[in-house]
Length: 415
Image 1 (cartoon, rainbow, N blue to C red):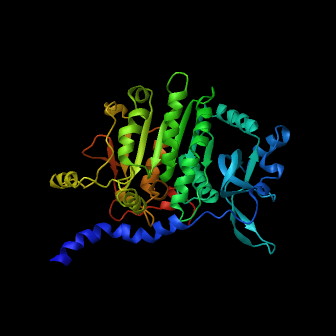
Image 2: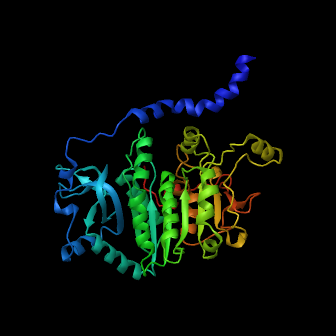
Image 3: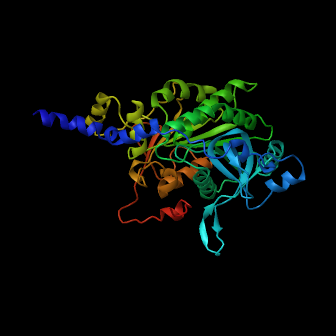
């Protein structure tokens, strides 16, 4: 009897037990400063170029169509600039392109790199204004999550641009995530360290006269960087609002669900902002094992993981024949379903990948939905199934026997 009674407890604790080595390593594994003084990485003028024609030529290269704002430490010692995983001495602005093969001395491919050029900040803003002016003032800003390097987050940025066919400029905000499995605690620390940098950038972007619409996309831990920044912009703009930040997409957000309900949604999705077309779309999955572990680490459910913390609520859903999934509640101001400020899209049935933490860029059905949302679609988009909650939709699994080319539909490169 005693052994049998312990089985449910062991099952519930299994994710935490399996994650204990990861947590211990994350706590005791320090960041290595390295063998080179950080000042030496940025000593070359390529790290801080002057204004003028030279800087303009750098940012205008056609092989670097994407914009980047970064607090990562750059390595400008060689012709090919690299963005490292250390904190930088300042925020820098530049351009980058699609990944290119590195050709060794024997003429053979030896890995890949993302070409990047750093430009003067004033020149960068001028370049962005010209680009946005030709694209009706629309811009997409992507903020990556945990365990990313500049290389991996750049692959995602370029995929988002291809997948959505976004007509305006695409900006990656790259913060110093370590790109390592056992550095979650370091990534959290660096993300919070970077809050001030990101909110200053977002404020300036939102207050430009030529900015008409900002589509803000975050993945995982990136949600905890962008949401406080949006609140800050709303508080500090002259009219108390910033409706240009209209379309906020949170993919697998690693943020406390109750914190989102109580504090964030009430401010960001106030009645005035929803009436001005502000909306948030959340992609969540019960198959997201990364957020399941984050639930256990932090003690309470993540916004992107529809776990029912309240067992009585789970039991009530089961009695009604509904899935035992719990989602964030809508803001009290968010009433009319035809113009809902909050939409939650459950990707459980179409989840892809080993850990189900990036369905919006891996699952064909989720990719289609994400592309539609980026381009302004909302509500009952094709492929969504209504649920018992008016603002929650579930993506339907493909028909039996239907084969989907996830790489092609998601415009994703093979891993």
